[in-house]
Image (cartoon, rainbow, N blue to C red; front, side, top):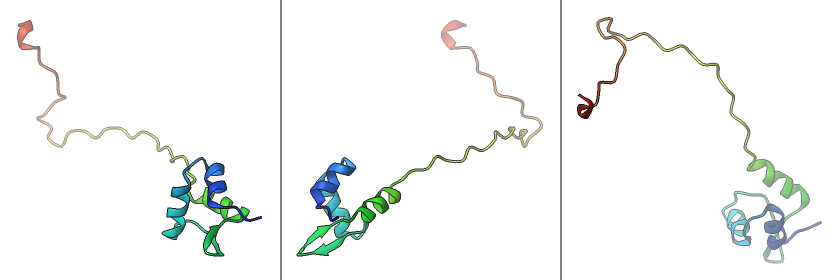
Length: 84
């Protein structure tokens, strides 16, 4: 089945302009029939895969490195001037 850009936009919840612009820039698959863009069900599935966002891999926390200069200790906030 072939879908028009307006149908694709409704399915993807975006604007018809965005669908046509992405096709014009060759960022999404399409078929050119009769001087207009047409999209198959396979095209829709591929478009969805192209814009899929995967969760990032969570890395275990690494311990903080010791200061390079042993003469420098941990930082401490000083008292506000008004409190003195």
